[in-house]
Image (cartoon, rainbow, N blue to C red; front, side):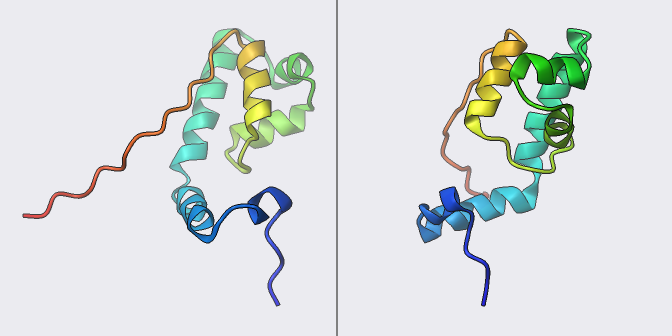
Length: 101
């Protein structure tokens, strides 16, 4: 018997879960977020602990996010963006199909 999906994911349909699994498998999505957080944090000369205090979380939570180890929640990203005086931009765009020759 498999473990049920975490509560928020259990509300997703099968197609949405499959898409999320592809994104997580690729790792690029969360790695890109992590890269941007590190870039903005270091540009402001903040330590992980200082950013965590501004965000209202722990240094270890910031470290996990920056390591790309866990998908961040949107509300967490909004608080981080606010603490770093940044905008959080989310864009949905059609996937590009590979060209067939």
